[in-house]
Image (cartoon, rainbow, N blue to C red; front, side, top):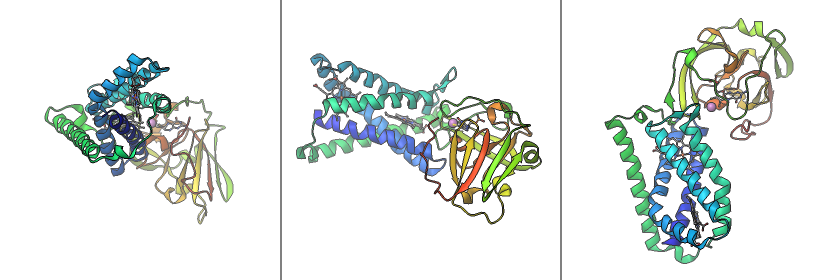
Length: 333
Ligand code: HEM
Ligand code: HEM
Ligand SMILES: Nc1nc2c(c(=O)[nH]1)N[C@H]1C(S)=C(S)[C@@H](COP(=O)(O)O)O[C@H]1N2
Ligand SMILES: [Mo]
């Protein structure tokens, strides 16, 4: 049981971590599919606690070097799972400015180096006997129990009902839709709101040649778009934006495969060039010029893409021949 428990835990942690990020990558059905696998693997980890606690208690008694790092791993994994559950059920969405989803992902990130250490320090090589029929049956039973638990929490939330029944397919909760003032200001990780002088600010657009757009020129456009901003922090908000379709600023017949959109802060994302007609460069939210926190003077509205694509404080757009996937899957600032 001991070897099996640790080996299954290993697989489940890997699956939970991968499917969590996969869900963040999408704004549509693949996000939900990932989260079904994600939640099931999370509940399967919970289902293994009776067995793992026997191993852990014996291990702690032996006081092997670094045993307290294993305790730190336990605390971070439990914190992450509890935060995931209070988020998904809606029982506790935030404490002050920190959302349950931020705690969930933060604790999981803390767990990574601890888990790597734990594996390196406590690894037991896999043997052929570990693939016994009995172990396969056990694994199947645990996964079935976990899937049933997950399905019943979903059912129960609708019956009671709990706020979790209202969340979007990404797991996010509605917040302040169609009320511009109620849209929170959110950064991906470390960015802070820059002060921009719209008089001297220029949008540097490199597509073939270089064209500098002034704020006044962009403000003259009034292309409108109602779009859903779905932040990976756990909320979404439907808002009315206006500005100019990116394709309208590009010279006709421009060639290239992607466009690199960069913020004054250095934050950047790369989009396929063919998406230019679906991307809005917004100058207004709810009919009035953007607040500094929401990206003044100009920000990207990328319908169908999660919030981290909606680059704020845009200063440069460059069309080139690099493929759009030539970037980290998530920003690092
Ligand atoms: C140690 C690793 C992790 C474990 C064990 C874990 C486990 C869980 C659990 C048990 C839930 C509640 C599921 C439910 O009842 O619906 C959950 C929800 C969620 N987790 Fe994780 N998680 C982990 C890491 C991550 C990471 C790294 C991300 C994203 C980068 C992530 C994203 C999410 C999201 C978006 C939800 C909400 C799903 C929904 O409301 O439908 N998780 N997680
Ligand atoms: C949810 C993830 C995990 C948690 C919270 C956890 C926690 C712990 C704790 C608290 C201990 C006792 C203290 C110590 O010996 O350092 C321990 C021991 C151990 N763990 Fe884990 N562990 C996890 C995953 C794993 C995985 C994936 C493996 C291997 C693939 C593993 C293998 C071991 C081994 C071999 C021991 C030593 C037991 C002994 O000395 O008797 N653990 N674990
Ligand atoms: N330059 C820059 N743009 C950014 C971010 C950032 O950190 N820096 N965060 C993104 C994320 S994660 C989200 S959810 C949205 C939030 O937009 P809002 O603050 O207008 O609600 O902006 C996106 N644009
Ligand atoms: Mo976000």
